Length: 490
Image (tube, rainbow, N blue to C red; front, side, top):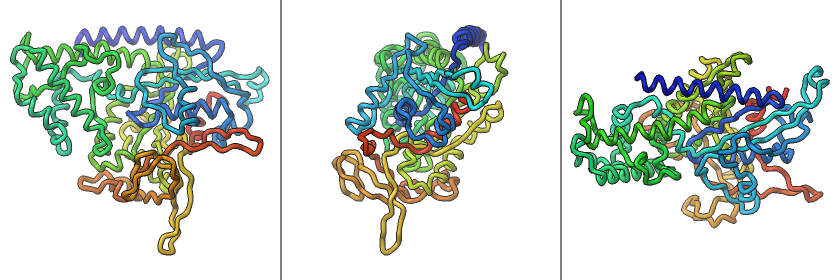
């Protein structure tokens, strides 16, 4: 570790301690839990937060969330968030999109935050005698692409470039990366720096990353994440760099060379983009849910699954799981509970949910081992924060088969037929294998050969006989809430 890196981390640790102390003083009146909703792009973070808030505020059906099922939740309401410099999560707009338009909310394009305050009665007679309890639940949302930057905190430019070029040349990627690799061969890293060369390489590398993310490939290891979701950094020098092939060049890079310019901009990216993102948000988490769109990777095949496994392991290695004493937690925060959730469980029959959980457990095995070793509690489940389908039974050749009912999104194709977004269909989704390891084997067929993955519209909410609109349906959102905050409402 260089002296500069050591001093930077030492300064960050001092800042974390001061912020934690400030938060602890603020919590003397009402305690808070800072929940990190983590997941790569299109994993369902925005939908999860919206469903969580809607069900708690409107008294949704949450039988496995003990504080709710025991009648101890007196109410939940939105309050001003603690960080005034962070945009507010627009939950009202997302609910309107889901209920009025029956469309899924747009992917997150910037960081946002929300505070939900829960009033509750304690399950303990002694605590209940002291009066009603109150808990602030602070939730942070951010683009999934930005997660991909966290592993860069521990990598210099040579390491990043070597890994990135190696991935681009690997089987399954070299065809997608053809334009970038062709340009890479035409430049001399030690030649004098030219802005035109830097811009051309950065543009081609960004196109390569975007193509990797497309559904037919569903690849996940795509750093730097801001290349795909630049925000207000678009066009800045901090995003105008690309990995170069430095395998034939040892030692320090010549001043004024293209490689030296790329290295300088990469370090600027780490310093001014990645480190503040980690310092201001991830170092302050208490609990964490990691949402994983395993079905999309399953349909793309073993390479996409292996890529997702690597991405999750590297991202989660940057987090700080573990337990600290209540006294020491005033100065140091650790994530003491982590929930791994495979989203879109409603796209499978419930008989396959255990198999989906087994696939997820295999995907995050390395992260689970590290978290449990650090003392954090870990759970794995199959989840649908908003359930878009219902279960049914189909008869084919006299044999009854489990099916799902739902309305495919406009443009979705099933058996050669394109749907208009208004027609409900019954679909046999297929079955996952009993042994998840078979999905990871090199040369294995994509799971899509046995499972049909269709994007469905959000459900149309039903009304009671009295005309009341029911809450958003879900699969195991209550179990997720129980694991994440149930102990804080006991």
